[in-house]
Image 1: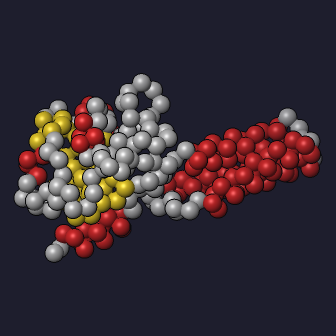
Image 2: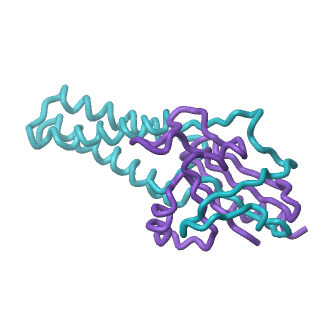
Image 3: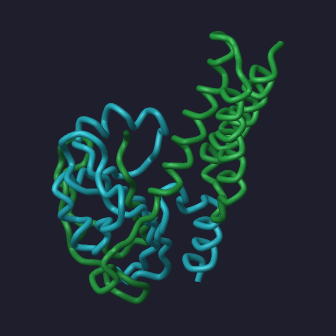
Length: 100
Length: 130
């Protein structure tokens, strides 16, 4: 299984911060929101961008499970940035969708 | 102790306690969907804080209610502005095939989504390290 993360951080910012969580994932930089827009996950709601100059916008927090052919099996969109995909919910979805 | 000081301390205790609970849940990534309880507690703390000034307090006694009002207002404000939305017509959905993409990883290497073919994949979009 592959784990990929996408955020608007610059590569050097990801490299500097990833020790905080020690995530064993391919962590991608999407400063221009190219990947975010390809998935249609740019936040259009309030508080769309962090304070400061860059980036111009942010993705809506989302978790996707994708099968071997690239098809989305399950996804969880946070309609509220204070609510993320609960790890237990993601694990349950992985059991339900990845074990079949 | 002046009456206002007591109100101020009560305001601070309520605001700080609720904020501590808030950050505990936030760390667990388990803030509830319905945060009405938090809003009620924060508004109560802010009201107690304002009441403290009306009742009268000392200079030192004015600090806890001020802190209670600031903490409560700020966290209530973040709840009010936390809603997110995507363009429903553009957003990917269950059953869709993910688009091809390429992006730099944290080592500056180009990652091509073709590398994901044949693998089960978990993709996580998040709001950056800030």
